[in-house]
Image 1 (cartoon, rainbow, N blue to C red):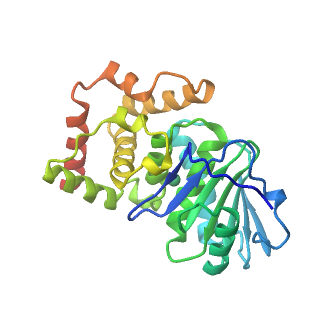
Image 2 (spheres, protein in one colour; image 1 turned 90 degrees about the vertical axis):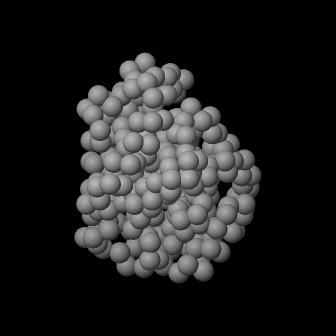
Image 3 (cartoon, rainbow, N blue to C red; image 1 turned 60 degrees about the vertical axis):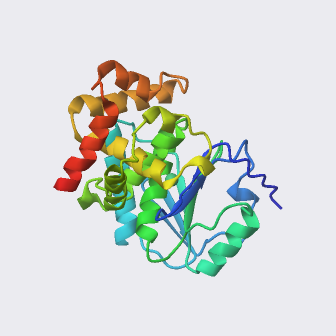
Length: 277
Ligand SMILES: [Zn+2]
């Protein structure tokens, strides 16, 4: 039996309206090999680029979602300026939600109930998900974590989530997260939103991330990637530096050096412009 002590130093708990939960256990507490035969989905296996998809139902390599997840690898790498890795990302897909729930409660007893989650250890990158109505969004989100962690294991929690929220949308939406946008627009009307990247950077625990944090994290990523080439380059350079040196200067510090001066006003303006479109 795998002893699992969920010290939630790093990870994320998605709250209202968000789907999944990602968890990085301390040390090497998790190993797929440690589990008994039949516990994990293993009826069919498909390799799609970096992804190794294990399902307890027949899943074909040409399945639209499999192709979409495979194609995301180039998109994530291109937009974030990251190299492509060959490190496998294992996706375990449970057809039966009850079986998935049983697996989660047996192996990750302290986890809140979520439809999907990502687990990183020193040796493996794995996603676990139940096959249900929102599986496409869940898998795009969690697979993004896999692609990013394969090359930037030390990506900060808030940015990790902002990036995954950005890429969880169908490609045609080009990162425009209607749910987060409506949430932030509501906060602007209430006068209760003061964007603050440093506050996001100070979050260390999954449990501390609220819906406001997820929405703002998404918004920073959207703003950085979609407003000017300089901002996109700033994010790309930052990720390249974190890859080499996790203790590199935070993104907020770099952003303050280049401006604009009123970053909070700029981000609110970004939401207002998007909402008016
Ligand atoms: Zn996540």
